[in-house]
Amino acid sequence: MKLRTAVLPFLLLVSVSLWAASYPEPKPADFVVRGFQFKSGESLPEIKLHYYTLGTPQKDASGKVTNAVLVLHGTTGSARQFLNDHFAGVLFGPGQLLDASKCFIVLPDNIGHGESTKPSDGLHLKFPHYEYDDMVELQYRLLTQALGVNHLRLVMGTSMGGMHSWLWAERHPDFIDAALPLASEPVEIAGRNRMMRRMIMDDIRNSPDFNNGDYTQQPHGLAAALQVLLIMTSAPVRMQREFPTREQADQSLENFIAGHMKTTDANDMLYAFDASRNYNPEPELGKITAPLTAINSADDTINPPELKILDQDIQRVKKGEYVLLPITDQTRGHGTHSWPAIWQSYLAELLKRSER
Image 1: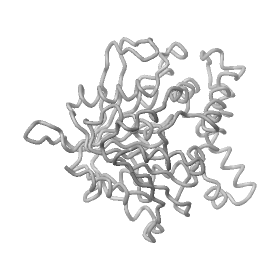
Image 2: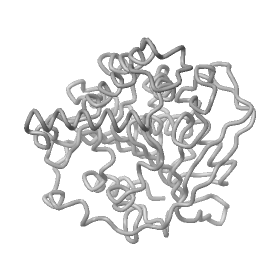
Image 3: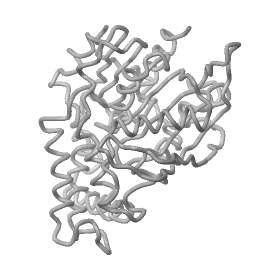
């Protein structure tokens, strides 16, 4: 149990592109889960889970998979958010920490996200009200039933994926060797975090043209919801530096809203944020037995360090460490989770201390 305030090395000031390396072409596939029952009591006859894999699973003499890594995306995101130079290019290339020639990397689109089954496919508000426990169960079925993975070397995730990583460490302690939750906390979503999420949901639901989810074009309230999302996920120091004039700030906001209005569905966004309603691993943190390193950034609006939640909760995790990254020119607020050049040294330490 350890709390650490990170000191970023000078090398992090070097352009992230210098770390980027080629990585194998991800292989897309779909897995169909039939007759799934949600915690809400609702069900679907079938659910399509879209996913990508890199690498090949390896097994020891007993048949246990030894090199599988599960990487989980954030709210409204998808597996594709990791397939770029600043994430995959830093972690999945030759000689890197999660070298895909040695690791079997699994990147799922969670239910309600990406190319997996979601409300916008046609059910709209008749779609089952999934929650994080349902999402983790579907991830488990993907691994065990579709891919034959009976053990994980590492589970890691960003934001919502970080919260899923806490749940994995609790629910399946013998299934994993290590956990790396990024930009998340193991506590019920309350306070300002809950209020911001409620604002997003209310902006969508209360839009006059929402039409109970059966709109013919994206409702106007989606733009207001996206404005809240921008505040949640941004960092003031970085934004002041990048948009130092009124004109630049206005143009950036307009571009953000216009771009996301084209790629975001209001029902999908509503369900994605509502899914966090029952999340609360805090009471059972003592069940976590695998080495775990939680990493947050000091400029994260969603998980501000002054709450000192992780400072206290990490003490209940037997092999837990908490790293708080200081604000630098490299950090990006909540979005720091997607730039491993900033935090990969702590992943390296976790992999080392979780070796078996």
